[in-house]
Image (cartoon, rainbow, N blue to C red; front, side):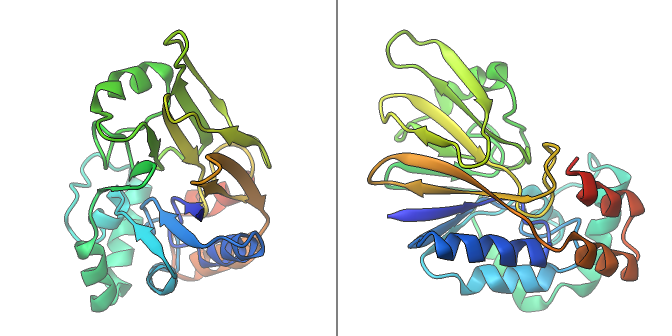
Amino acid sequence: MKFGIIADIHANYPSLEAVLAILKKNEVEGYLVLGDIIGYGPHPNECLEAVIKMNNALVIVGNHDWACVDLEDVSSFNTMARQSVDWTKTVLKKENRDYIQSLDYILGSGAFMAVHGSPRDPLDEYLDSLEIFEENIPFFKERNLCFVGHHHFPLYFRKLAADGILVGNRLKENEELKINSAEITVVNPGSVGQPRDGDARASCGIFDDHELVFKILRVAYDINLVQQDMRQKQLPDALIQRLTVGR
């Protein structure tokens, strides 16, 4: 099955539309949504409703999702993040709030497991270095492949089967990563709605669980439209500006 792998939409509906269009063009048969559907952006209800309508979708919750329904402590959030959470609470529909509360923070399906943060800390840990990857290896139980979000960078880490060496790198547009089922591997598809790797285009991935190949896709979207909506809704200016540079 070909999965469209989506993370960190962050209430950016035009970017989600662009990603869904390119995934449809690539004939995906299902979806894996790695949390943080909302937070930061101006379209929380639209993004949640689009996710709910997806066919064959596996969906987990992220820390911003839980924050927006009062299930995550926001004391560690920066000021901008707290402001966006507070605004989202004022507009979030009850049925969408209930949907978030129904989601789990970890799942396993076939060849992979999925969390928002890390296997050790499914909601809040950034799995962004070889050191943290190594510390998470004991938490791989039934499956050796884990998809994560949260960091907003397309990247991978793996423990090589031949000699146990740990390797990792960022993933570039259209780059394919062959998955070895004997190797412990973490893959992050990057962010749909708020990329932070210096490329403002939305990032997503495709995983073929038969061929065991993951591929990164990038797609442009109307950033100005999102920024106009954010200004209208008086969301923090720094959140608006960062969309332009992908940082």
